[in-house]
Image (cartoon, rainbow, N blue to C red; front, side, top):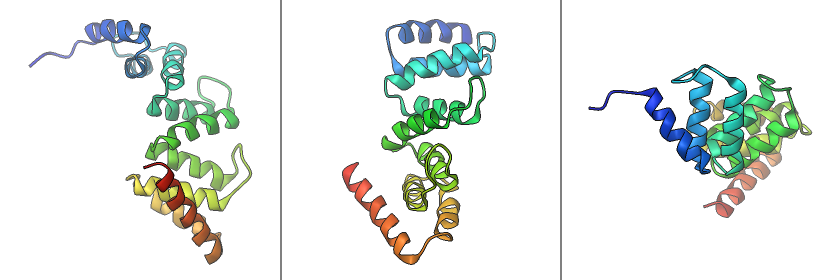
Length: 163
């Protein structure tokens, strides 16, 4: 068994990240967030997370959405949060689908839309997100039966378009 070595991991992640490898960029960002093998540095973490997100890394996109929504490290910006959550959600990231649904449910950065909230919660639930069913039920409690049917059809159509 090989002993865990953050310094050695950092060396290889950095080499791959510098060459544009999105997974390495994301892993490097996590090392900076947690101070693993490097001093904890949220700005450096954000730099690498953004690089991975721009290369299409779904979990990096979701993380960047969280940073913008929470206003931690950078100024809160719901429009940017929505952009990054949506990018990850479109790739089937259940956490991002749930986060996006919550933004539609609460009208954060978008007009409040229970149909879209229900649709994204449905998709998140289908992708295994444990809390999505609760969110979907909350949205459904604010909708008519016709709206629920419409949202279910939207989710079904989305799944057909994104196999």
